[in-house]
Image (cartoon, rainbow, N blue to C red; front, side):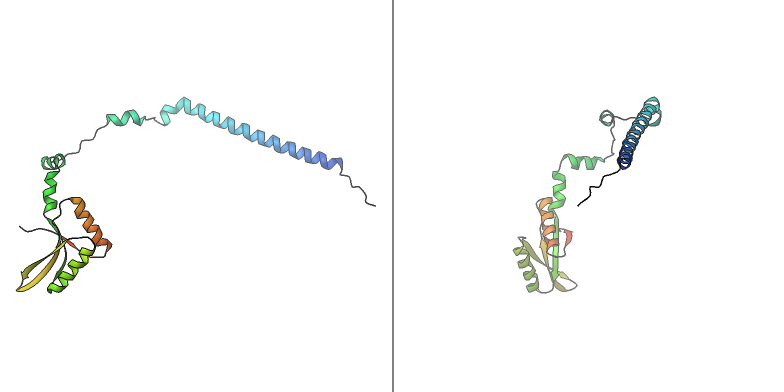
Length: 165
């Protein structure tokens, strides 16, 4: 026969006392936090202008203007972008220089597969004929940048030069 075990009333009283102590401690901490927060707010309100200045940047920034000195030539270039176009029209990208015309044509064909139109120009340097593979002249800065990016992506070295007249 199983005996029924009963729990002592002292155990229940001790557990209830522990629970009440825990609740009282939480309420005490909550009041301490509320009081310390309210005290610092009062101190900030009393001496707030002395410790931290407040700046409303929506009203301050429109009043501030910074003058940047720009030369007349640069100002004309900014106002008239066609001035800058002349410098782009005269730039070419040289992607290779070969003594053999076959090698130059081979590189020209490789560039054509990338969608770039190259030309081969011959030049005599120190009584030797060199065949230069060049891209350009470019009509705009964006087409120049596109060509440079394609060359970089395909690991083709280039040199930017000014086109001689």
